[in-house]
Length: 203
View 1 (cartoon, rainbow, N blue to C red):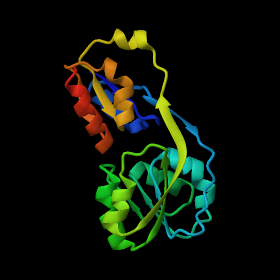
View 2: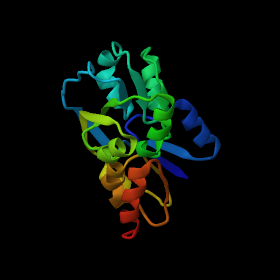
View 3: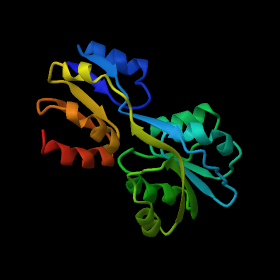
View 4: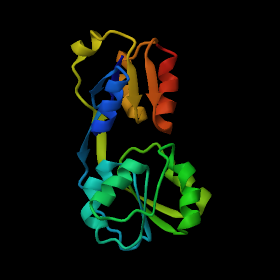
């Protein structure tokens, strides 16, 4: 079966090997592209930071290298990006919604003011997370995402079923016209699940 991974960053070599061993062909087709907003990040009044993605790390790593507060991440891959830069990580989330992760984050590290470094659009309800956990959150939108260009003729000529991996609601919506009812759709994260519910009815 053809497996299409739509994450912005390509799968690692191990993932390609695993799919090949399973008799599958793996394509990396980013559903989204991004551009930096150029926003300035000042962490001087924060005791913690939350990084929403590897792209957020790349755009803020120089500031984070001099940050002595606690750092949380949305998931393991984002944490790994920080560690590769020599930046310590206090806790990595489950990638199933930051709102679910914050109570455990704060139980281990009771901080009060958090710099949320991510895309301009985030599936998380920052106001609700702040209210539920009695913390203050300030959003630093370091990049914006938009649909990436794809080879439409190539996609329309695909033999179905194929398997898809989606990591955000925007990614689902960007490629929804190429998904067929017979396809296998793997959804990673709350926003991808929410978007696909609305798409599924029209397949």
